[in-house]
Structures are given as structure tokens and as C-alpha cells.
View 1 (tube, rainbow, N blue to C red):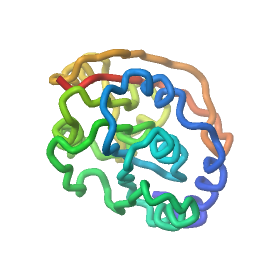
View 2: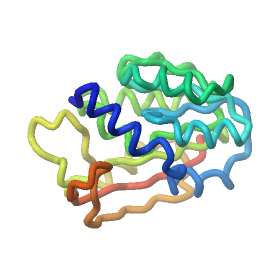
View 3: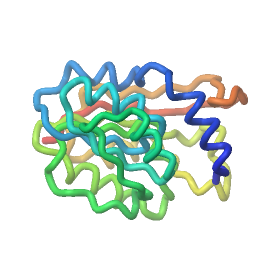
Length: 194
């Protein structure tokens, strides 16, 4: 678990970054407007983009610094909920758009499937989901990490009830926000809710 100063450093380093490329690829698929859910919103770079697109955005993040970040942004369309994903009460069919960008894998494996069902149930029919799953060969896949890693077949099984628009597996050498080397194995999914 990161210490408060680690989170401050993370927010400072990511605040002015462009929105996620996966989010930008998902925008043309959007048919509905209204409410959006951003899981693991961090420094709100994706939530700010969604608000500019006309969404009323609920950001769920377990890090309390998100409250300060939302006050700094001062956009009445962005609302924060401080909660781990597995303790968030996903409302039924409320969101036209859900983003979970590089955040879902940080949910423990013991509650991951229930969280992902909550994500799917929170979506309106024809709503769009864009999210990442970490693959088994990711360098953070170590015993005791508290994170969740998947195979391609597992991601496909979890996606029941969704119509995939893009499903891409990538594996490459990367760096963390702080510049540490990392082997990234990730699945990127954009899908409609059926």
C-alpha cells in the first residue's frame, strides 16, 4: 500500500497527463449521455475529459486525496466516492459510460468477479465500458501482491453480457509513473452492454 507522500507524488506526476488512449478510443462508440462512472479516478485526468463530454461523473477511488483533487478541479459534474471497489454499492443500470483504466487489477482476486458483475450491472443497455485487465505475465504478478491477473479466456468469460468492440492483448517493457522498469501484460477492452 502506498504511503500518503507516495500518493501525492503519484497525483503530481499524473495530474497534467493526457486522458488515457483507451478512453479516447472509446469516445466515438458512445451512444448515450448522462452519468459516467470512473473507477480509480486518481488525479481525475479521465474524469475531466468525461465531464467535458457532457457526463455527470462519479469517481470511485479508495485514496482520500481524490477529494482534494476534485476541489482543485472545481467542476460540479465531478463527484467523488472514497471507497475500495469491493465495498462500493454499484447502482443498477445508472451509467451510460464506465471507465476502469489500469485500476481494476488492484482489486483483490477474492472479490474481483463480484466487483466486475457490479460494474456490468451498473451499466445501462447500450452503455460503453472501457477497462484494463492485467495478464498473467505482468511483472507485478507475484505471490502476495493483493492484485488480480487474468488469462485471455478468463477475460472473455468475465465479459459475458457485453458486446466487445475492441479487445486487445499487449505485452511490452514499460515504466511506472516513477520511472521504474516494468513488464506490462495487459488486456484492453471496450464493449457495449447488451
